Image 1 (tube, rainbow, N blue to C red):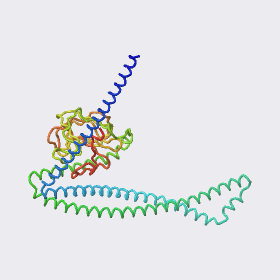
Image 2 (image 1 turned 60 degrees about the vertical axis):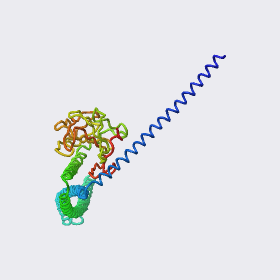
Image 3 (image 1 turned 90 degrees about the vertical axis):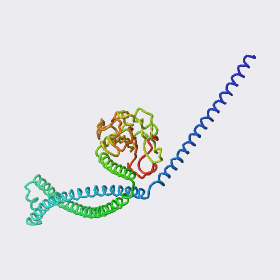
Image 4 (image 1 turned 135 degrees about the vertical axis):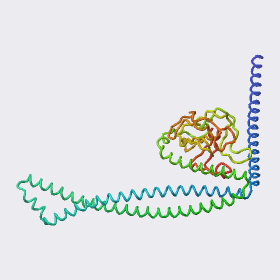
Amino acid sequence: MKKVLYRIIGIVLTLILIIQNVNVYALTEKEKLQNEQAENDEQIEEIKKKQEEIEAQKSEAMKAVEGLIEQISEAETKKNELQKNVNNLQTQIEEKKNDIETKEAEYNKQQELVDARLIAIYESGETSYLEILLSASSMTEFLAKYYCASELLEYDKQLIQSIKDQKAQIEQEKTELEANKSELEVSLAEQEKIEKELKQLKAEKDDEAANLTAEEKELQKEIEELEEANRQIAKDIEEAEKKYEQQINDLENVPAGSGFFSSPVNSNNITAKAYYSSGKFHGAIDYGIPVGTPVYAAAEGVVMSTANLTNSYGTYVVIRHANGLQSYYCHGTRGSIVVSPGDTVKKGQKIMLSGNTGNSTGPHLHFEVRKSPYNYKSSATAYGQDSRVNPLNYM
């Protein structure tokens, strides 16, 4: 009996110790998470202070130039959109003109037939159909002639209705044509206005740039090259979205949360995240890796754009994924890209080799993620100010 009692007491004590350890462990984990959160808050505050210091150190001329560069970039984007609209309208106008000409030719042909039929009916007199029917020598012939006369009358009715319908369609298309012409005039006027604004903004930028230091001029050049490269990339991708629409639609639409992306390289050496050490917004992840390291697609997708630039992103690949996400792999080794626009790639498939091309201060891979509408702003100081999103939220 004592042995049983000792065993029960032992079990109870063991359970008490386990519960205490669990509570201690839970408390430790909670404290650990709270400490991590506090550290993160401190880092965020430190980054904000650095950003404020950097902004304060900038000359007024540099601030003015950055603002003008952004305005110029926005105007250039608007100009491109207007040009696209103008091209579309001109195509529509030409197509409608040709369509109207075709319809009018058919209309005139049908009108001639109707006129000929009306003349024939008029010349034969109102009793022509009756005479035809009464001339039948038998009931069978009468029914045959009656059927033919009915068919002829129905044909005449359809012919006249067809003429009316064609006329209505032509008038509608002419109205749409005039509306397109009016819209084209508005777009051309807006385009001319944008051209004048661009000319003025560029003149103002050049005046302000004359007051920059040599270091600031380098920064100005870098910003302008990046803005121009992003506009071109955006244009290429927009065209690719239409061209490869079917491949994009065929992608498996899985939830784009944690684990959606795998690491694009076999390395955990992240040298930069959302912000550089200076506090400047980066909007991507940088992996510090040697030149020639294999780079892999972070998720299944369709290759939208590839290029070997001498500036900006250098040698890069852009992949479109399900859920409207895009991933950018930049500063690769020139000529190392092994995929082409339109290719469907699998997660983990090799796409190029890392390098040190474009605006790069050392060998690394710049891994960036964007969501629709995929726009980029060099003036962005945090996520949410353009289309870039934190890649770590999807890994």
